Image (tube, rainbow, N blue to C red; front, side, top):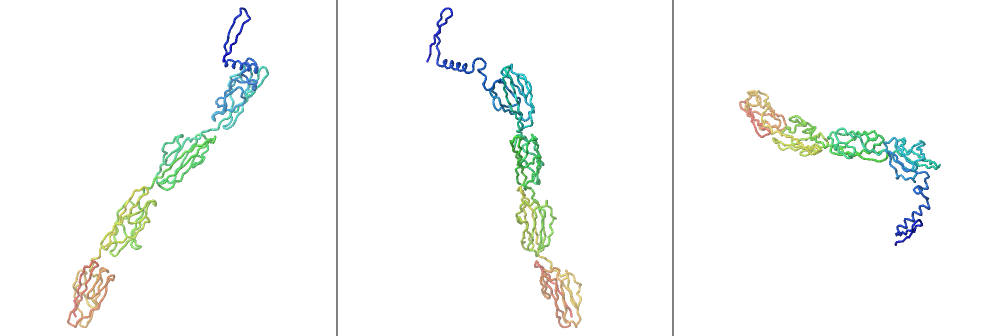
Length: 444
């Protein structure tokens, strides 16, 4: 819709002008009328009726306003950095003739006024008073809070023994530490970037801790919590890996027959893996005892993990190998071998002594001499023959019988009539079955 307004002037020659106004033009005209009727003319149109003497600008440096500056807003909250020990307040009244004080100190428009701050976390009120030449007065209030520190970082982080992977960086939170199998504990030392922060977790607030590790082959998680003065926290984490044991040694090795220790050849040494033990021909079994140097190792083979086994031997003259496998925790295996040699049966078929009573052997007894003669008087009707085996396990037969296990024996031999001879024979059979015959001819 359009409206036509016609206007004539009354000055001089009459002129006729025509204006064409749109609806938008009329709305704008109405707003102007409202403004004039409500606020009057001139500068008063832009001044709030709530602030008699307004500011045109206000800054606090360094600082962050919670809400943007407005001339009609007289109360503000400002946050200053924790590192700031003072701020600078700069204000300008809208009317340059207005006098101003900041915290009771007379201050010119645009003049920077320094204000000391309290400790972090404290708030300092700042009052700006404005007084116009006409006697009007306004007050602006600025509450400046020095923020608590948000620094929740570590400055240093060290571990002993070992080194972190990756190398320490305050911005990196996760680390790995690998230590040897023989390391039972790790010492951690840290320093805070902000001395006012608080440490917790596995580290005390003084920044030190001794972390006891579990057994070889295990991992332990360590957390270090840094809480800034403003309550914000950050957690650093270390995974400590203790290496598995590589000890696959024996610390002792014994071979026994009954309760009697047998001799290892060579003598036991953890680094020596091959041994020999000689046992008698009658030994049918031995006991082998192996002791692990590392309790975490595992024994297998001829000896179970408990470390002791009874080994049955084969027949006399044979040998048996006993293998003892020692597996370290990390999987490396060492094998000890004990060769047990059971003696062959004895071939000793000798006598160690031979006598005839009464009488004297001719020639004198010798184990290698097999034939003898003894002369006795006519009145002797019998003689006693005594023989001792060189090997108690040999057996004698013939005129004198002595079983295995017996050292020797004696037999009474009746003689023939005077002038006759009597033959005595003693056969000695060794454990291996070979035999030898001793003979004695007795002349009456």
